[in-house]
Length: 208
Image 1 (tube, rainbow, N blue to C red):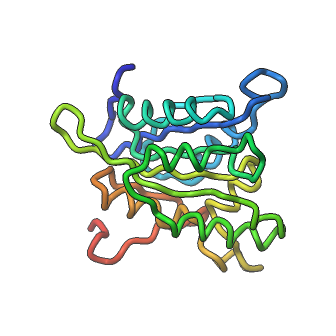
Image 2 (cartoon, rainbow, N blue to C red):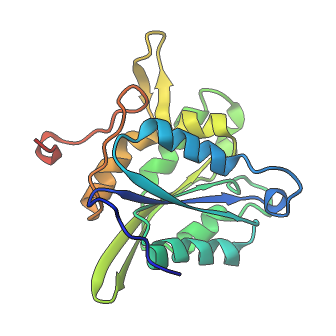
């Protein structure tokens, strides 16, 4: 696998992983990857490239895919969709933790907080956020890995958060914290379209 090359120093390299037995087998059309791509296209104001994977609900496969996207491709951010419920085949969180060096529990907490505004079954979600930090050819590299819901509508709600009747943020979406997190772990400087989701940074971390 060739390591991804940035066309710009601040180009975000993002891995998109849809975890689904039936979609990966061709039983039905995957909605996770198109949903993620469409949302990123609306939200990101800075350059980005994506590397997509559609895989089965298999822990070894998920772990191998996450490692490949971070270690080999060089992704700064990996977003997974699917496989986070309580069913026996839902093993995305276990695979994600297995390849992590550190957990970022706030992401999972906020995702459930947002989803609970829509459905009481959000408490069944086991989504996690983690960091994977590696050294490749003497260079340090880190990536943020986030487990997201399976449906495009829920993906958008989780990333954007909840807005009031005037369209102002009422409950922050998790992506508001993603650009600063990636900046802190040595990744590119990411800009977003504020009308979709406004990236938050302390004043000291803002570019002039």
